[in-house]
Image (tube, rainbow, N blue to C red; front, side, top):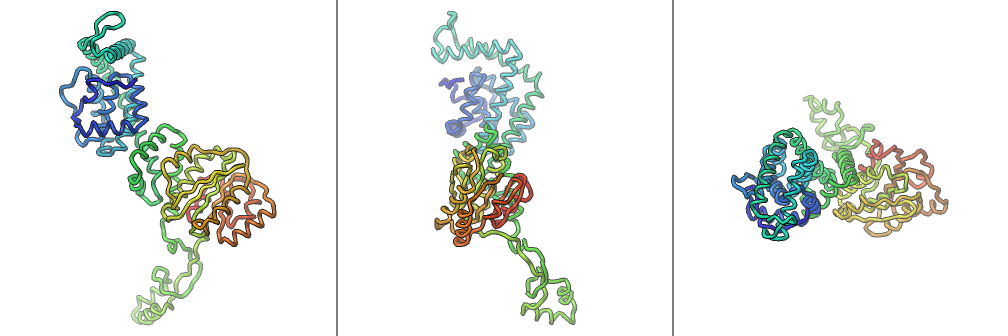
Length: 479
């Protein structure tokens, strides 16, 4: 439904104030999703209904006012039903004074309410006729400012439309009463979809530390949060990427949780004075009165027996370069791959390591993220990008060498991901391995295939996995 200016533009069925109205207008101007829902509204005053839904979610104590203009009676009936719903009452505990969640919730509640209205109108011929007549009257009133006549010659007045809206509101009340469970289910869907969008945002922006999602999200400008939220809500691919990013970040969190020294494996006995690694026999000597002094002397001198520990084999801790295969055969794993990329980038961000992404097939596309920081527009661009085509290993490896020559990417960790094989010329391999040694970088390769013949020739570590969800792929989050 087209936007119109009317005497009702600033009216509400709630106890809204100037701040509420101004803030909603600001958000409305930012939100293409709210504008779309408004345009699809089945009711003449649907834009005002959206404003009231937002206020009911955002305000600390929203209340429906007793007396409203006759043209807003339908909105009042809908808001009374929405605000009385059990799921809505529960949902408000999340949305109070939260601009973003209130905005997303308004979009979802607006969509679902409108879908319900359209469905009821289709099933009820009398409702359909009434709504069409009301829409036609509003169209004429907007064009002729309550003064002109309709095409059939009858005079359109405020009384005419008031009478029609009153009759429609009574019929709508009956419909709400008769379809109470269906309407409640519709609102519950809106609640669930809103929370899924918010969780998707946390997954995309959050780091690998528990609870970091909301903290990192608050650092993002509101407009960017809203843009990405609407992408997640409307784009299935973006939602899939967000889901995978969240899952892989949980894996990364477990891998990065313990300090390096706590992640060591016992591999023998040596001498030292690390209390946590003392052998049980030494603890027994400490507890016995006759041997306690001797134990303390040896402990001070670092001569007590402790477990020797051997750390896991890891890469450097320099910048990260991810070479990601985007040949045609990788399309089915693209959402996984993007989620995996964002999770690895969150490791780089936490450790303040520069991150370079090289997408490759028979061509390359390179993205550099300083200290692992990625902007909203970059996330959207990454989700939309897929090169397709064949596979050429030499292209990303050559690009890696070029990038490593830059001062900020010296001693980088290169992660190479591909789902197939390729032939590399011997001179190329010799030169690459020579440069690898000179520049002091290492290559960790993930092969989603059946043969490691080629990657073995330029990799320090090769891991065979069936997809990114395979347990073997989690080793990358230890780098």
